[in-house]
Length: 110
Length: 114
Image 1 (cartoon, rainbow over the protein chains, first blue to last red):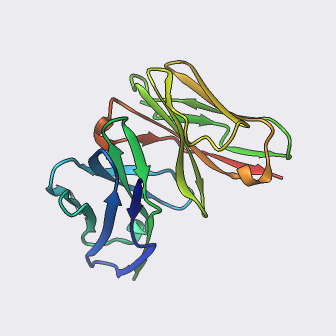
Image 2 (cartoon, each protein chain N blue to C red):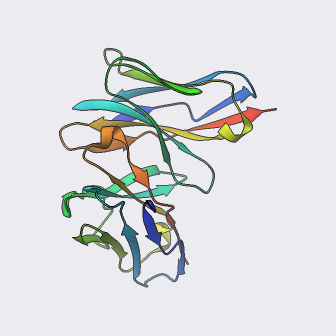
């Protein structure tokens, strides 16, 4: 089967660091992406990991461990504008299909 | 580049009516995806095309839904007849190749079927 698990909600404080975890079960797994979606908006691409390890893009980093079928998105120096939903998505190599998780709603407290 | 363009942005219709959603992908992108998003079911892939050819339509809920891509710059998603449970936000996305897992989403069409 194809499934991704991520927490439904996470709360953090402005200026802090937060980690959003994602575990996946995807046949033909090729890589893991992360998307951000603000209320009323469209998902926007944040990062993609095809190899194990950490990818850093500014305040955001993403990690992948293929052996553990696990990844996470790390957001540093949280800002109020980071309040949004974050989706992990698994890319299936054999047919280029992307399977999205249910999303994690990030609440940021001042 | 203008990004992925979708129209209409909002659609309100009555049950039984035909609904047509339109999408113009980013120029040069060879993959086009149609998604539906609801609170209950999250983001669901309905169908996707590669070089204008439908590759996987297993996510299309039923025969009332159909999608076409007559050329590289245009796709439609049609619902006929529409039902209240079809109310959702419909997104179109495009990518270049596998895109490294990168898809570019349009602004979405918010559909309400009364």
